[in-house]
Length: 398
Image (cartoon, rainbow, N blue to C red; front, side, top):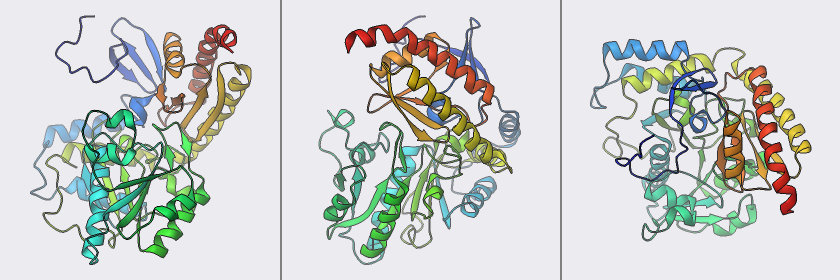
């Protein structure tokens, strides 16, 4: 194919061009068929070409695309009511991406403290290995040197502590601390699950110190772990939560939901988005919720996740020279590699299986939530063949 000379080279793209998709499968123009266990990085929650999602977008496209947030948007209001009704939250702000949802969350935490008479409390405690987006504020929150390099001084206001260290969190709290920001499961950071006990400890600490607790559920939300939101596994809730990825099923939309208390400072003019939650985006997200909230859907995700994790554990045992461990919850799974994860991703693609690399030399497996057991079994067979291809070199290198 010709070089993409007009596209800014900010991605290390694989030389694949897909023409159409169906469920968990993607097809190239030449007829090659791939099992998509990347799902657009946990985005296409209902797979490709889901009839209900397609029809909802077609109907909205025929009626009206965009009016801006200068006017009421009925679909957006319905979406907010549904997210609130299914969560801890009282209100929702809509954006176009996870990074924008996190920007809203960060601003809201600062504004809350200011509205409470403590404008000096603007700092957030974050965790090593975190990924919260690619804006200047969110790369500063994530603290990854690779993402920060060359962009000047990081945005002030973030204090990073070791992953899962409650004593370090306590020591980091100062007179300027506004809240704590954490992913229930670090996706980009290597499918690292935060112990539910630790999240409960953070909740108690935030309440004791007058802080807000912010959850980044951009990747874990909308059913990915087998519950609508990952925080539900812990038995407690945050004050603010950022969502995106699976919410639109592939259509760009992000949301920041919060309690009315946490959002007390977010009055007219304090924040905004031209495109956020427009008619097409709201139609897509409402269609996704139609399916995900159907009785039995999340039960399927939990069952499929258990089946998949058991199969992966067996593959790990059979390919000990290449794979170190299996991790994750629901259909947010991965495995740590003993060889470069890029080699595993490439080998899997040669077998017609699409996967996603992550930190800590991990390969992510993020199938659409509608995936069948038969497709999981097929993916595991392809993965086994890919790992077997790498095993001789891995053994020789040990």
